[in-house]
Length: 115
Image (cartoon, rainbow, N blue to C red; front, side, top):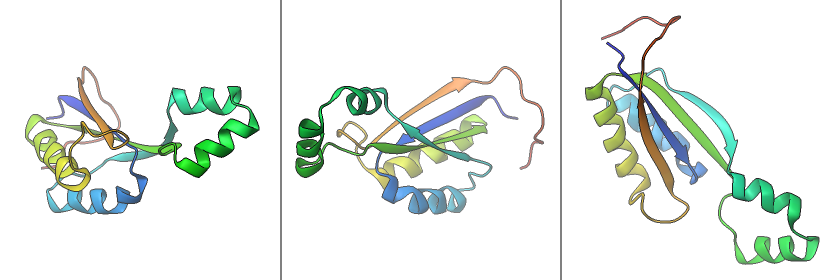
C-alpha cells in the first residue's frame, strides 16, 4: 500500500538514466520525472548583469537545471529507492548533487497498487 511520496531533486542530471535503471533493478517503478530549476538560479538569471553571468558560466556555477523525480510508494520501496540514489549519486551532503525527502501520503486516486 502506498503510504508516502519520495522526492529526489537531481542536480547531476547526467545521472538520470543510470538512476532510473537502478530504480528498475531494485523494483522501484511508477516514478514521474519533471524538469525543474532552483530558486537561486532563477533569481540570479533575472538579477545578474550579463558580465557576471558570463563569469559564472566560465567558472562553473553548478547545474542551472535539475530533474525532480517523485514516486508514491510503501516504506520498503522508499528504502530501496533511497539506497539507489545514494549508490548512483554518492554523498548527498556534497554541493550540487541531489536533495531527497519523503512526505506522508494521505490520499491517492488514479493508480492501482502493484506488488
